[in-house]
Image (cartoon, rainbow, N blue to C red; front, top):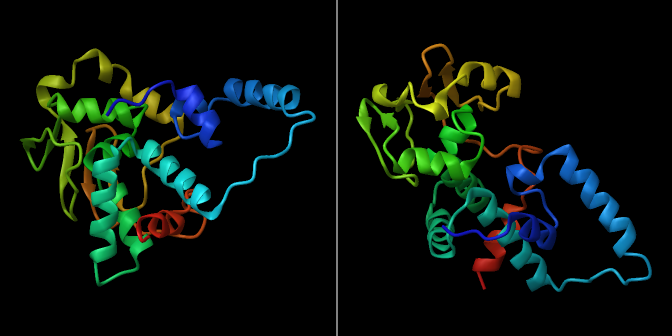
Length: 207
């Protein structure tokens, strides 16, 4: 998926949706720009449609999914009869293999995680899998392919993960020394778990 200039997109959406826009340096820079450019200007007021469109774009760019892919994910989530659409959407997005690789800390960004999967560096249940959108299931085992462990992208990985503080969710069990993970549950949308308004996204596509 071609994204474009991340700073400009993040500024337009008013959200730190990319890892490079979540640094303290970027936030301080944006705060300074905001003070100097908003003086004397009226605050922009969005219509309900505008708010829904904005939120849809935030979610889509956060997970790095094309419009067509995202629309299909939402459609699938709404059609699931056994749970709320927002819960199903969250689960479907978080269960993507590229997102799991990112959550494990094997990659600093979802975009790089997607490339790792596409280039065959990740194995699932002992087999190389090159589909970033693959939805992991309970008991799936995720690991770095043996032939890729010595590549530069994984150099000093353990120290990087420890320094980062970890972002492994409770539904994944991760053995850091072995760089192996096991899916032991399903992603569950909890209050405060995400700043993204998935209900607004569902409303956007329900029109």
